[in-house]
Image 1 (cartoon, rainbow, N blue to C red):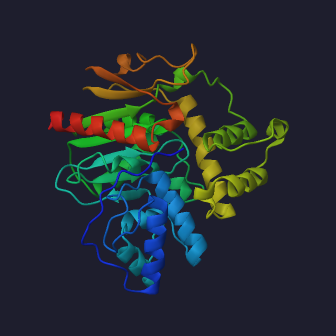
Image 2: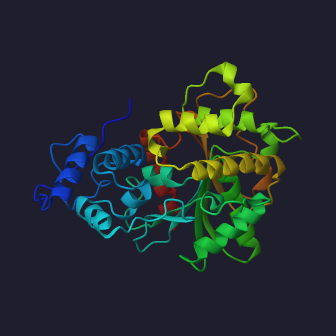
Image 3: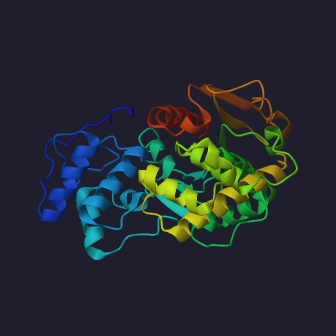
Length: 356
């Protein structure tokens, strides 16, 4: 079960002024398990996190027949702002490469690189524990919104993402983190930015290890196996007898039936998702890290490890400074679950303050 939101309501909050706001306020309160919310209260300030955000947007789509995504909730986190967005028909592309989680703040931004599936909104779980004076951006896979643009290497992807973060922050010091596959890209970005003469103020890797540690082998992973891996990541139940012949159409059907947070995806977008995932698996197999000049913060999932799991010392040969390792009591896939994301965010915030 998900943890209950940790919230503080505004005793002077303004009540809904229109029927649309009335419905939205009711849905906010339902999902957050609150008696009521004000139209200007932020969903995330009230204790909302990425999993509750997907639940809320799903409820809004069903109740109001609205084309709405987590991206829109991030951009417009209050009832009033969301109602205005819906009224204007101004919904944003949920798959933009640069996804603002919190664009405001006077401190250097923290850029969070997507895991293998390509989405970045799971990092919204960091919002409550990283100070409001620090902007947060997620970087999402370009191939989610631009079909066919799967990069040939992690290094090419890193260079693309560096161009994206420079539209927000032209020069360093840069603060970058990545979870899973995103950790490889974050590391490559750090190496490339240093090669370009930029300073890295903070580099963090969330349960990621150099590609050779995964023993993927020299052959490309068959697509049906890659699809099965992705369904497992999403927590889907699949008949084992279907796995050897799992097709894209079967994958799409299972996704629509079992993953409520992604049931807004059209078939073409699901194909983009599959292409992104399978290409990223291939990039892991090819990737060989460069040398990073400085320190790195490594979060490791303490649960679900086996004797064949990558070593926590795997990054030492690639980092000139120290690799500080912190165990989190979760599985690899649970790093951005609400409680764990809050803990990780708190530790990251402390390290950022220390580095300042």
